[in-house]
Image (cartoon, rainbow, N blue to C red; front, side):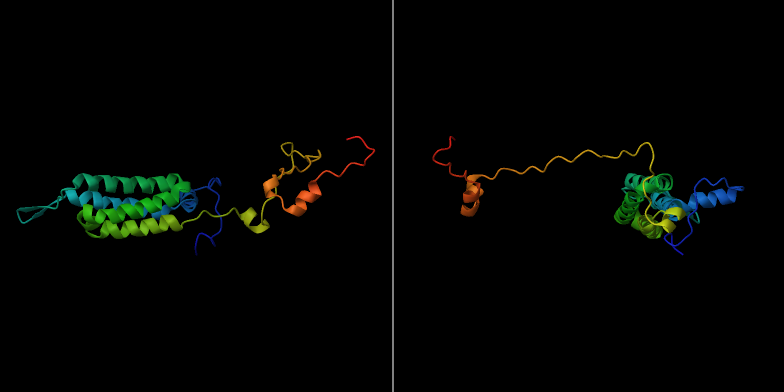
Length: 191
């Protein structure tokens, strides 16, 4: 089942329980893409600052671009939240998440040792592919017509006559020039 074939769920239907309200909220936005974008930002953020202790020996995985890893990871988390709360910018969030995941390869220990890279690419694809559901009434009835009411104004005045641009003599053909020429006056008629 995709978002195009799923049944439409209104965002505020006055659901009785919290689980049903969360389900309705989740279906009205790119939830899984945003969640994966936030999860992808965590390993990219964590590994450059992590220190691993192996039997008394400390192994530091810090890179020279620790600040770059911090920015990339924080931006991916922010893009995930933005996709949740502003679904209209989902395409931007998806493209930016994909680009940040690719940039994290050289900057942040191969994209958080591949974990952040793969999750970021999946999140970007999910964010770009998500589309909102159409309302059930509009999908069944076809295109909605504008309601007739006080805001609808009917124009009954005559349309102005169509005006034409004058044609310059250089643009006229000899036949057009002869048609547009003034008729010769009769010898006895004043001009």
